[in-house]
Amino acid sequence: MKFKAGTITLAIFLAVASSIARAQSPATTIALGPNQIGLVKTTQGITTRITFPDAVRDIICGDLYDANTGKGGFVVQRIDNDVFLKPVVSKGLSNLFVKTGEKGDHTYSFDLEVVQVSQAYRIVNITNAPTASAALPQQADASAETAMLRNARQQADQILSQANQRASEVYAQALKRTEELDRQATARAQQEVEDRFVRAMIQGVRDIKTNESHAAARKITITLDSRVLTFDDKSYLRYTIKNNGDKEFYFNAISLETGSEKTAVAIPIKVIQGRIENRLKPSEAIMGIIVFDPKTVALDDKLTLYVRGEGNAEIARLSIQ
Image 1 (tube, rainbow, N blue to C red):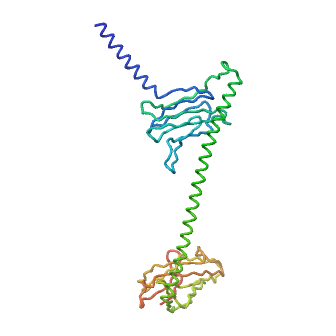
Image 2 (cartoon, helix red, strand yellow):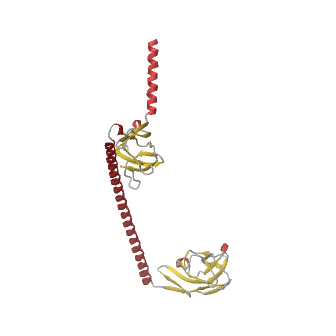
Image 3 (cartoon, rainbow, N blue to C red):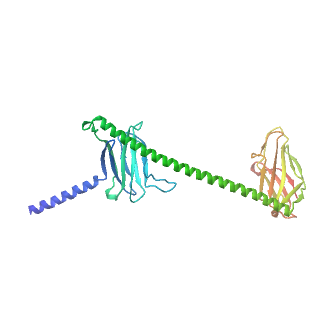
């Protein structure tokens, strides 16, 4: 019985120890020297944090994810002393260089491996490995560090050069596409103008005389062309509003309405005016053109132009037909 109880106790102890080991396995510490490469195991859908002794200055990833093209295996971000890695692929290999310190004094090198969830690190703490000066001559150690830095710089320069070249190609393609779209838009606009002119010439220009071409009210003068011109299924009426008073004048809107004063109904119009604001200083005048569909007005309909102020209050009116 004592032997059996001891066996059960040992089994429970081993199970607890195994559970603790599994709980601690996602975090690890790697001591890196200048010419050493650390292995970082990551997994898809999980972010791994790498913590450095000093603030991170530059990051260069061999397979950096590009959101514009959807290519690349790793999303990389940095905050203070931390670098955060997240693979977007289910398997693959890449490498990573990290410079730390205010002037990039230290360069750390890593191999990145995408593994299963159970094998991936969540936290990787980086420490500086003891220098090899005690075992090797200082000159040899300096030469090895110089060679490693030179190799890292060459790889970094190559990666940056490739990235700059691709960015230049993308920009050139976008610029070329924009120029082509502008050219097509200009050509379409010119063709539309030509088509409308041809239709107007074929259909001819029709006009109707306006009943009233001049009105004065509240120290303003409204003048209409004596004719409403119609071509290419559109009617055009030119107007001029002048401020004859000694104070600034403002109007809210211009409208064309059919029917009697009590049953007036506004028709859709487009106002093309010489200025955006409906505001005139003393002695100033403003000119514009009203464009409307003649089919919205029957021959026997009464058509009136209204100039309205705040609260849609009538300022002046002119009878067109």
